[in-house]
Every structure is written in structure tokens, then in C-alpha cells.
Image 1 (cartoon, rainbow, N blue to C red):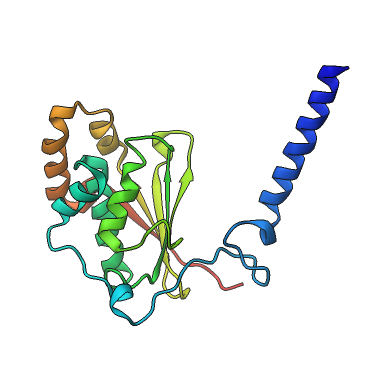
Image 2 (image 1 turned 30 degrees about the vertical axis):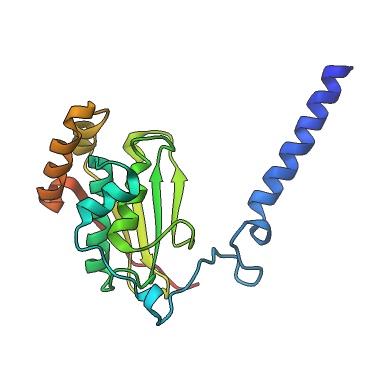
Length: 197
């Protein structure tokens, strides 16, 4: 009887949780009208314009505590996104979703994306989404105003295997290598044109 009651309570709690997650009006950051995710918008003041770090390496080290190849990969993707979507650092015109296993070193990409774009998790214009394995890592980026394509940055599997589980003494070498490699050796960029609904 006691275990049946525990099972019933568990089912009810899980059902309420799933309902809250699947109904867009109850998702944190969603709009009741449009049922889409709403983040902060940029403005024309000195904070929102921001100042891109002159020394990205030192900025990653200062923010993250050390520089690793996953940070640098995120920074490289962020810089490519600014170029490809014709925007500038710190304008917060992009919406970024970083799909990674939610554990280090994979999640370190997010800090590189912050330094690379000026977007932040707290402003909700950079979010993490969990994937089951390293092979599914990707970063999806589009303009908040809906113009232009959705860009999917898919890191090369051979490169990800190269930087997976490095020894501490290899971090600087692998990080510098990532900073100097050709983009095409690090990741593929796919462009998806979306239809307005």
C-alpha cells in the first residue's frame, strides 16, 4: 500500500512537471501571445554596445579561470557568427543555443561564446541545451529580428575527438592550435532558410 501511494504521488508530480514544460505559456521566458522564447533586447547605450575584448585569450582566462580548446572553439564559432550574420560584438542581436552534454569540458564552449559574441546566459540570448553525446554537439544561431538564415555550427567530429579529455599540460598547446586553425578544419556552417509562420 505504501509503495502504491509513492508511485501514485510520483506519477502526479511528473505529470504536473511535464505539463508545465510542454505548455509554452508556463515555460520561463516564453510569451503568452506568441509562445516563443523571449530574451533581453539590446539598446543604444554604452552597456549594450559593449566593448569587445582586445585580448580574447586573457578575457577567457579571466572569466573561465583557464584557457582550454573548448573555450577557444566557442570563441571561434562566436566570431564566425558575428561575421556571417553581419552584426557586431555586444549588440545582442543574436539568439544562440549551444547543444552540448551538460558536463565539462563540453559546456566550456558556452564561455567561449560569451567572449566571442558579447551574448550572455543571464540575458537569455545564450542558452544551453543538453544532448546525449559528443557527436550531437552543435551551436544554432540566428538573428533575433528574424532576418537571415539560421546558422548551425557543427564541430568536425575528428576535431572533437582530438580535444576530448586533454591532460592539463596539453591545454595551452591545444588552445593555441584551435586559435590558429582554419575554420573549415574546426567546424562546418550550415545555413537554413526558415519560413515565416
